[in-house]
Image 1 (cartoon, rainbow, N blue to C red):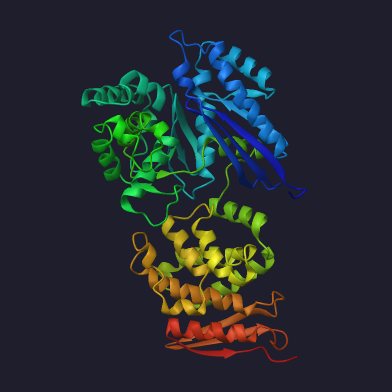
Image 2: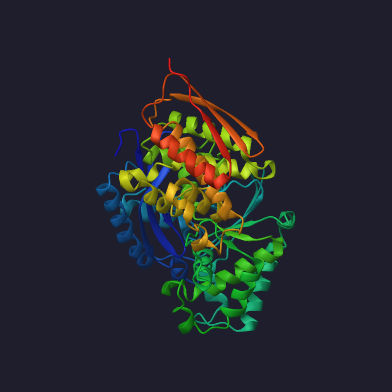
Length: 509
């Protein structure tokens, strides 16, 4: 591990499961997940009628925490932050539990308040999406947090003392549900929602979902649709899809439900109670759609630890790209920004104004990450770049934009004869095939103009006259190395754009 990186372990002692995630972090506040471990503890089910977690139940948690500490030690973790959420904070003997677990495991554990849990969930979401306004819902085992944010700033939040585990115990019957039980849980949830006026102040905003319930619904929907990009983060659940699940899952017997592809056996019973909570909140706030966030409480705890004063980033995309380049780029930032400037000069001359903003974003990401596959194999870098981007932790892009960036960044001369959008036709627009080829050749040309990385081509002067494109290269000295790359890139560019290209090289001397 690099000397300026710090390895941090985050332990989340939840109502349903206990997780350890280990991150490598940078001085700039970037991070990369390097290890994740999970233990299904179901602490909510171990709370007694007197609302206590007794010593016998606590003793089932201690060995888990001790093993987590061993894992951290073996991986060189320098700092551990451990937090306990609803099951423990709502227990009558919460401080006794924390004191005992902290002493027995030799890990300092903090109680995460309901407000903190909502705030940390918001931090995880806001730094993973480029969105100004919306709601966040985090359905845990023993609590549900709902947050409203405006202008990328936290506005309101509430932590409700119901989650997928404890409501399943109260309203479900061993994972089986009747329509009457469904209505009772809906009424119970609405009875708590009406106490907070601000929940009706954001009708039409998107709802960002955290927690195992929403991730499971996303996986189930992707399996059903045979979705071509099996990424959870950023996956959209429409109102129609949520209603479809409400029609299907509660009426399905538990034994059959737990066998569904996409739902883990340990969640087959509580998926229904979680779904009912989710759908009730979704309808009550009047959300326009739901999006799954792959980042939430644990990432929020990390953001708060790394940047306590200013944990909200202005741009999730910029933050994400900066972190990716910090961990995995073999090209200098200066060189990549120079390539972007060259690409923008071409695009601003050729692109449609109405499409330019989105196209600039696609070109930017494609240029910044076009070399990422070389970390695996220099000679097959384009193939690896495509795969890497399709499965990458880039934040701030839709699934469609992620696929487009991958295909544009990995574009090669031989791509011209392929229908590149075919595999992802369920996600891409019909017009995207043309975008891939045009922006792919444009990026390829910009990269070729500085393939030596010594900046001989300082800029370009581009002019379009009807079907003729004059491209004068600005620089010092004669281009010797990389000349063939430029000529091949111009040929592909000319054929795809349907232009007559007149290329002017800098004069020698």
